[in-house]
Image (cartoon, rainbow, N blue to C red; front, side, top):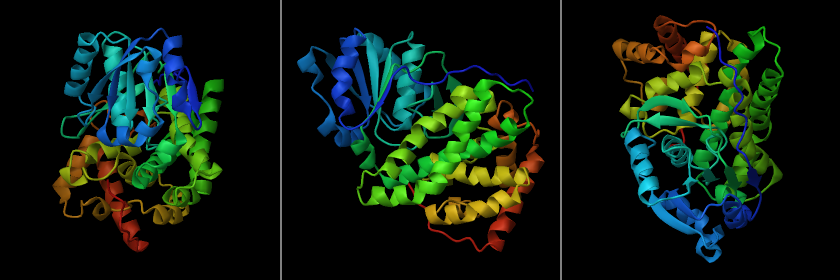
Length: 375
């Protein structure tokens, strides 16, 4: 398979510091934006409100829109309609990944409206990457779309994210580490010696090293409400470094087998209470079994135990699945256009099925027991 290599590196502007939201009115005026659609969740707005400026005082009209909960085709169509009906010049997305992905998708499909993102959690790289992960209205994964337009502005107020649920932050750390393991095999074995791939490789290395070195302390700092350098470093690694892997590497740095496993198991309603990154963490282990990287798995055990990440089907409420159920997951993992097909080893459904069973045996061998954090 010939992999694409197009650089979609970053938002046009990214500001991360205390009082970053104070820049919002001036940044909108600098873009000649006078009327914005303001898409948000209820909880995210409550957390961010103390730091948000009064846009009306700057002569900017804001149309308040409550997010419906899923980045689905129906929700995207609803927001497109509102953008046009309200005659907005741009859209602001404030909240988690699904809010921001919906804002990006609607803005692009409505004709290329400017997008301003205010992430209230660091659970993924959605604020950084010009793509959206799509779901059905009831939460099953549909894959992702990539857009040719970069986000115009990202404003990160660290105090808002510090006050977000810790389990989302943990899920973000798990999803970030996956960037290394999913891109490692491709970037190690490619014959291309392009500068962009070197940047992607270093960004992926940061996605592994920073969480492994500082992740546990950052999580403890967050629980105690401490805005430390370690926490900020891990938070920005989740948002920035995670996005740079695919931004520089394109399909050489995209999600592969681990996310394909994630996508497959989201079809099981038993897993819907688990956050994206938690399910991806399980997918990482399935991928490492597929690649026969048993030493890497051994090295990850302390980290998985410390963060209470899943290693077995029972950790995801899937212990009662029979052989046919597991084969359904395996077939879904390798469905046409699934992310696993970006991996150069050409895994089959039988490979995935056997890897799941091997992981079960390996987890039992390590007496891995945990009480997983849930959404």
